[in-house]
Image (tube, rainbow, N blue to C red; front, top):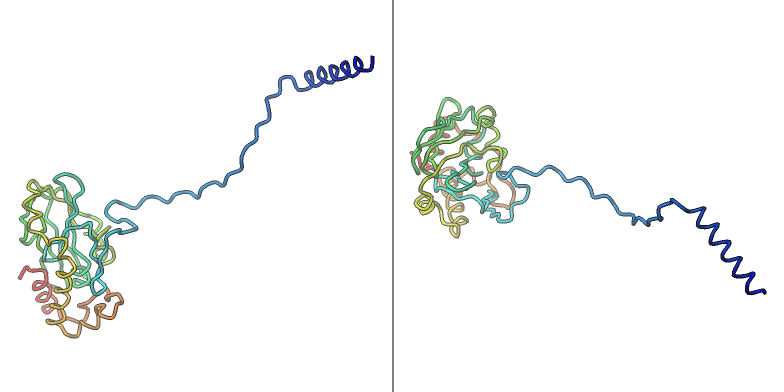
Length: 234
């Protein structure tokens, strides 16, 4: 008899529990997780926050992703037959606080190693050679309005123009080989010291950073002659 009463008791509890919880969804256990910090907007392709292949020569940055003309202009292959062009950090700091820039118009054909763009300062002009041969697609209007970008961010916002390069193979053959970049830049710095001994203290021979305007104390004509010599456009 006792067993029967116990069974009826359990049955009664089961029936009550069924009617009390009917229609309720089963309780889910939610694991607590930390929300990730919001991601910052990605940097433009031409100005990455991190350079995985960077050389430093007497304080001058030489990113390995670019290719360089011996006259210190660089090119970066954006996609097949399209290259972005600019001035390297050595050229930017040698040009210093320029007054304005002159760039070829879109549709102009430029030849590799020949004068393609100009910096103006104190009434004088220094030309730079194009690292590639092809047709100008676009110029950097932002840099034309604010030439300081070339000095402040030569490998990013200070780019100068994009060029359609039909013969990439021939173009690459005439640029500084990658394994010689460090030696080439060091030779340029030593040539600068040879021409202007006082500038040895303005570059980074001691491991620091070069001053922003290496030629601040030069007269305009001396600035022109030095730039033309080192940019190979004399």
